[in-house]
Length: 406
Image 1 (tube, rainbow, N blue to C red):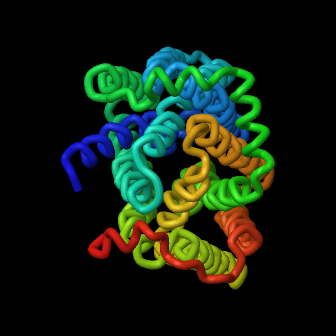
Image 2: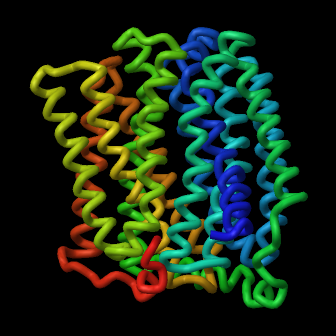
């Protein structure tokens, strides 16, 4: 593994973490924001949903734009908007303005999540792409581990508004990374093949590709389960189980650490057994774990330690699902990698926003609605895996033979 490979993973991972950091860092502050702005749980969760919606929609612009104009220009525009939105959030006088600026923040945050995936496809396919995607995910996943904990310290020291000033600084660092360290991977000669008409044709092609849509949906329902946890866990852990914001941050980080740690085995496992086999096994383990958590809750076992342990296992399996389905979905679409990455991200995040909106209607301060929603999303991922990949074992890709020590 070359130093260039590692440096690219670090840069792309840091850029990819900008948007998620804006989600994860303010999670411990959700109850405090509600109190400070005189808003109920549903209104506060709307600030999260607004971010998801704009985060998703903007990818339909940034992905194709990165095909047309190169990978770097959309990053400058997107991260710039993100910085402006973050400043607005820090100064928001009420929940309505906070929701509006979170929407603007999400519009900018779509760029540094969609463009790095296209860059991975520019550079590699198959097992090598899985390795790079997994390393990118390792850096990217520093966000759900550190962001809530950092957020809890910031809240204690300076209040919830300081979180958004910190996120503003992260956006500025992102702009510097793009300017000083990122190489352009979309040559000018390739950009001439991309325009609005070709983008529409690319979307039409992708929407007719059942394999692409199936893999996207598997990842979407896996991430939707995690989004349910994102939107509800602070209220459940702090309000229902009585944790402090800092204790909540640590509990949240345990599951994120499992997600990250297991994801780092994705390249090695897929090199040996193939992408499809790993997806099938990982989704099954994910669904069984969250199904067991729901069964425990329905049986009256409403304990935080049980929830954390079972989710530790479940989100470990999800750590294998996310990078492998992303690589498989993009593998056949190298010429339209930006559009494919954008559509994949948009569909996944729109589903996540819809799930958050629906689940907010059932939130009652207890763990059961959250657990039931997470288990239902995992079950949907399992059904889609059977429909998309079937039950047949597929041979490992030829690239695996070239990397026996992976």
